[in-house]
Image 1 (cartoon, rainbow, N blue to C red):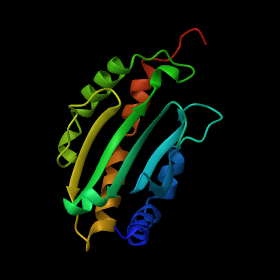
Image 2 (image 1 turned 90 degrees about the vertical axis):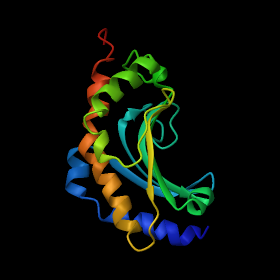
Image 3 (image 1 turned 90 degrees about the horizontal axis):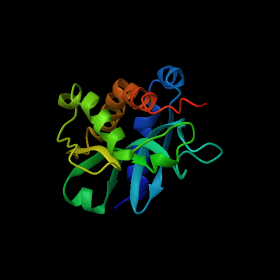
Image 4 (image 1 turned 45 degrees about the horizontal axis):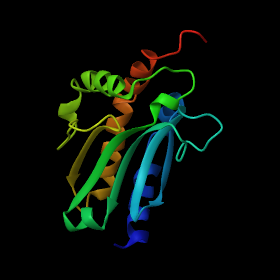
Length: 168
């Protein structure tokens, strides 16, 4: 896989995101390489353990679009929403399975906007899907997935609100 080529495409998509909307929603972006994959992630600091980098925090929620050698071979761009170790997220009392079920109940209203999506996973992966890899439209396709997430990011906050620790 030509990592530089894909990093440029993912960075190009990230650069086209509406910065005003990202700021209003308190979302941050990251483009990089991890585990032989190139990724674009969208996340909030409030969705991660405090005082830790939200990209690698012990407890965190994020949206990711990525590609790796296997995805290239299959002509796919992959995407998902991950929720790591939510029981450890300060300020909340979260049971991961209940969190995933509640998120997915809200997501049902938006699932038609997400190609090849599935929610048939454990609580770590809230949803996951893929789109066809097209070298000509790749940057715009990644951007469309990221914008789709911008339209549903409130589902994460809405779901978290159900688990807010009432003793704080």
